[in-house]
Image 1 (cartoon, rainbow, N blue to C red):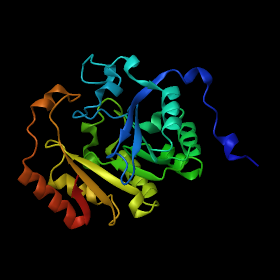
Image 2: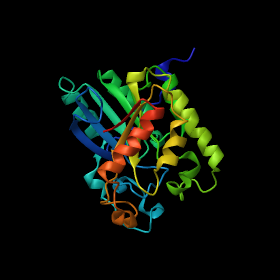
Image 3: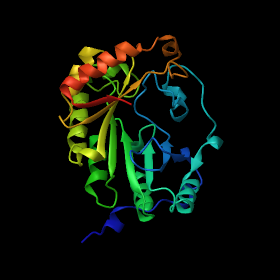
Amino acid sequence: MTTEEETIPRIPRDFFTKPVGALIKTTLVDFPGRVAASLFLKGCNLRCPYCYNWELIDPMLGFGTERQTPDKSLSSLEDVFSHLEKRRNVLTGFVISGGEPLLFPHLAELIEEAKSLGYKIKLDTNGTLPDRLEAIMQNPATRPDFIAMDIKTAPNRYALVAPHAMPNSSADALAEKLARSVKLISTLPADSREWRTVLVPPLVGKDDIREMAQLLPKDASWQFAQFRNENCLDPAYNDITPYSDAAVTELVSYAKKMIAGAQLR
């Protein structure tokens, strides 16, 4: 019989010192109800034009920008594990975000190690990699305690956030992937999952919200956030005016008619 320890490979020692992402040593907002550390891993298969974490994205696949934070400003797994070990009596949660963390080649080992230190794990994902999500969730040693999934826009408009990453993916195929991820995440207790949407005017209107709502379970926690027109991956989005407070309230209220747990964070 194959044991869990045998199914999760060890991280090569020479990988420990390589920069893997940005470590936020203490956060009160990233993991509901917990004081946590957050790791924003490099690499993403989407290119959301409003993304302000562009430091974690390969600039060659972006919008022609050469902006990139040097790797020396990022943390290694050695740094991460050292911090988690040192703060294990203070922190109770560890958030693994990105980028898209399901692309990280040693995600299973990262989760397992953090769990062994007593941490509860929150995983942030964009929902486009359901096979990898399912593999992580099926193994008790790597199953996250909380999962948050971003819903960017209506499924049939995802080409607007993935023009370089998935040029050959049809809208129907991508919508199916998103639906599968939603179904997987819905197996968690209602207080251990959420979906998130940034209210970007070109990408999220009432029609989009209606389409997104059809993906979600009725008991979903659907967290909306205001768009920030600063430091965007696509500089053109810095010139887009965010929704007014009144418009935000109207959009969230509209979402709430379909998903009672919709709210502005």
